Amino acid sequence: MIPRSLLHASTSFSYKVTSGRHDMIRSSLVVRAPLQRRAWSILRRGYASKTEADAKLEELQELYATAKDEFEIASEETEKKTVYAADDRAAAHEELQKLKAAFDDAVQSSAPEVGAEIKARVGQRIRELERAVEAMEEMATED
Image 1 (tube, rainbow, N blue to C red):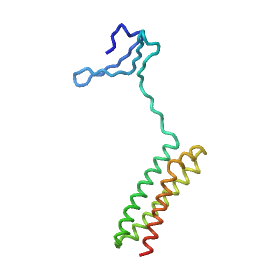
Image 2 (tube, helix red, strand yellow):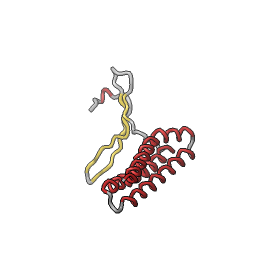
Image 3 (cartoon, rainbow, N blue to C red):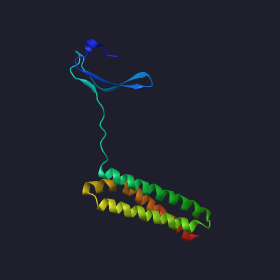
Image 4 (cartoon, rainbow, N blue to C red):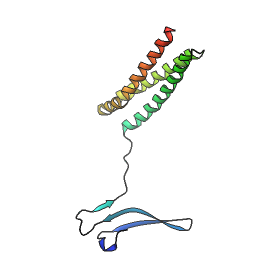
């Protein structure tokens, strides 16, 4: 606790009552000590709203997770050479195509700087998944 003699600025508090007790919530506090020239402040942090890129990246992340899950299932079934392997590979390929279409749409429909950010943050993972699906297809045709 800071002694009152060191406080030279205002301190504001808001209170709420919870089940008969008083809980103190600090909404803002500005303190200046005489030996210290700068004000130390604890203020409420304002969170930035989602940018256009963040919203598109969130959608792409969901599609990527689905495509990767389908790939992992298809890969496992292909290695085991089960009856379901061909259908699982088709499902993985379909989800990859959905992801690539959404990626291309997000890049082309965005401002150039947003498109560049999307490419930088997601493009490499999509290319890696695409190569993995192609390798799985090759492995299936070799057998």
